[in-house]
Image 1 (cartoon, rainbow, N blue to C red):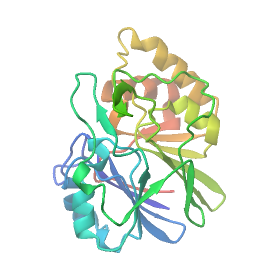
Image 2 (image 1 turned 90 degrees about the vertical axis):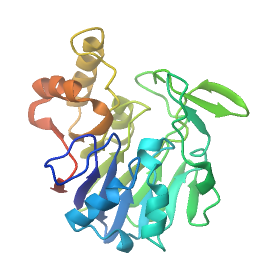
Image 3 (image 1 turned 120 degrees about the horizontal axis):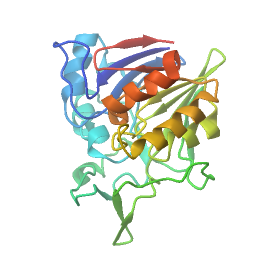
Image 4 (image 1 turned 60 degrees about the horizontal axis):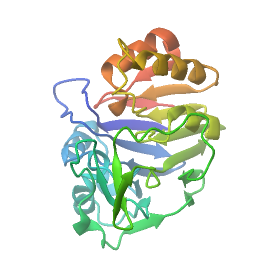
Length: 263
């Protein structure tokens, strides 16, 4: 399996364009996939530098309906003329941040015929499956952190029903891809028990020098109970990653834009 980081908050060198967001190019199970598209067309520029052929992508996945993961959707649809894009049927609901700013997708794209709207689960191909885990019991309570969604005309705290995860089964390994792990990374590893987890942990608002330290300590302890190796990025936060790294050592690593990972 090959993973190329097309978009992330940081870059491994000045030749790559970083932005707050995530986009990963994957080669797995004999297929080429795109997992998320960042907040702009930067992922396409970086793909060219990394030799990732976006026109040859067979499937695209949108992990959830926030702009920093789906803002580049229009760019992808223009660059690639054939691949279906799998996203939750709730992805185009209106989403807001703690300040009330709209952080959702461009509603003009909702009628694009190549969009495939998913439910609880969706098998893309042999070894490639999407799951939302909505309704599963959570070991750790889900904190919306001020994020909201408009459902049925009412604005309410997020339940992240628009979030889905890509589970790849290849060569006897289970590799889980998560955009932001809004439903809790500890919950994800308890549900899936992956060999490898790749994605953001959404810890960026947990201050390791303040009130967030206890939550980070508890998360690190729970994550270390599993056999999983973690590759994190994006919304985990730089300071939060450094704090986790001290406790989790070689069980956790950081992915920056421009890097290529072979599993």
